[in-house]
Image 1: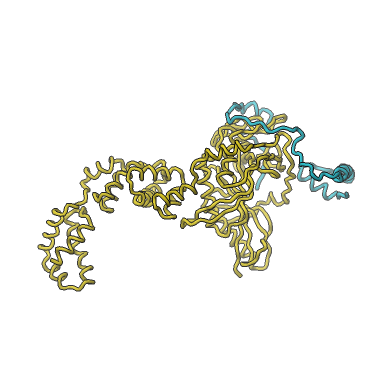
Image 2: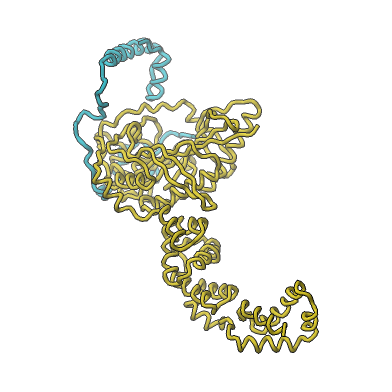
Length: 95
Length: 481
């Protein structure tokens, strides 16, 4: 399976990863090695096997609808680089 | 060329739970920024989601309400994208196996007739936070209170052809959600938001054109306008030989236009995969059957019952059942007045107009169901003409007491007593000999017109309180001598 460096750049953009130009060939090659492994898995006959959404053979437990968390905003915002009026501040994003 | 508009809708409904879908933080609108965002909602490392039982129940109730098949096994997936108000870098949603599958239910048109609408699927997901773009220089403020609010996303088939149909559908969804009590339905606060997928094709074609998606429209009126301007825009492009670009657009209500959301131009690729932190939701028949048995009477059934047992028109019944409050008001008032049609007329006429004027809802009405019924009883028993009834209604609205008290205090009793009426008619006839002679000489057609003069005179003498039907009959009798 030949994934091109252009594909890798597109995936990197979706994942918000920067890949330097001089690294792209190397990353593409390693990317392809992983995909080769997946391609091998794809050859296994899975006819009649139910898709697995979770490795645990269990059902979701549900929580009663009750407010149990008291929010300590000051403590939670302690790690934030910038905060004002209770808002987290991030570099401007415009739609 | 004439074009057909093809639309499908995606509605996001915020569920009225006490806590968030995956955390125990409060789910309430209007708190100070980030005061209701706990470590789970902030996507802090190591935090794990625990699913809210009521969110699941509400989703199933909705599914049952729209006659859909319930997914007995549903799975959460991660929808991956980057935006600062989505702290984890993914939204927990349901993509491959939703909790509510295909369904169909009847939507009333404005005239009261019904059309079927098909839904594709409805799934549970978490809402994102909010961004404030204009308050901080060069920066965006992020409030994550809304992050983790339970949402039900409702996806329809592309069955809508007019804005009117789309709005009728949204109104009936809104009505259903509030009947079920699963959402407060407050559109101004974002409890119900609508995305419109819209494309045009030549009339008669069965292939779909290229569609655009208008995001996050939050009122019925804006839905109608957004559809109108986007239809116009696409029509202009197609008629000048161009091609519509598939993209996400935003409706700007101030300018009444849609415009491209540039940040979403990169083709969306959400790379969905099963959420490893949550297990499949498995629902058994007993759970589903119990919820089904506990459903309240829904708008469709109530509407049919109103038509059947109160002999209301489709139109009146549709309006009355649109909200549970107005349906309850109607039944309470009719229970006392025993005059369903009159009650419907007054609710949809004078009462609705007065409420509209003051921007009040029926549950805030200064005139209670019992008070309105008191008025209707006096119309039905001929104490009040419709003209006098309006004055009594005004008194009720101003809090002057019950209908009977107002009739007494304002002296509004209609004169139905034949003896008293006869006296008035007799004196009017005596006082206007010329007109009487004219009337008696006239042919039947002309007589009808002349009768108006005498009615006016008697009404004046009775200060508007003569019963019009009796007066007419009496006048004719006495004039014909």
